[in-house]
Image (cartoon, rainbow, N blue to C red; front, side, top):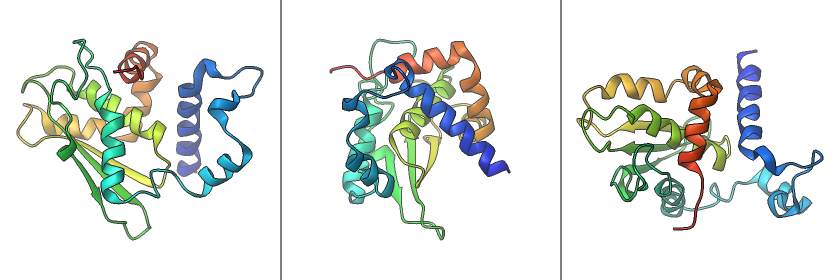
Length: 181
């Protein structure tokens, strides 16, 4: 029961990420791809087929373009995320790989560290299939309330509740919006 409710919530948030791209209930072909593409995607994620090094680089490419909520720079430009902050852990007993992201807030009392962690989680969840488990943490010793924030950004119920808030969801969407750099 809990699993099916969680699946419904995740599906709902993924549909939100597609947003206005749907017209008459159908995704445009450039977004949807061919039937063969969909079939392949169901069986294998592009990211799942990559080596750990390639996967790490792909995850970093997704994260580096996230914009800071307060500043015009990206998380990469502010050294909040960097290539070495991503670790790919071997499969768990259930066959799920773990992607661990450790980010470094700009200051030890950063008031938006939780929001940054939320942006990282949402962006990765939208681009990775469910075959990956995400662990997102603040770099050890880099924030005055790191344990509390780590607990928040790794709690599925808190994430779902945060994304139900329209103002917070809009801010996350602005931060993770892809632009040409």
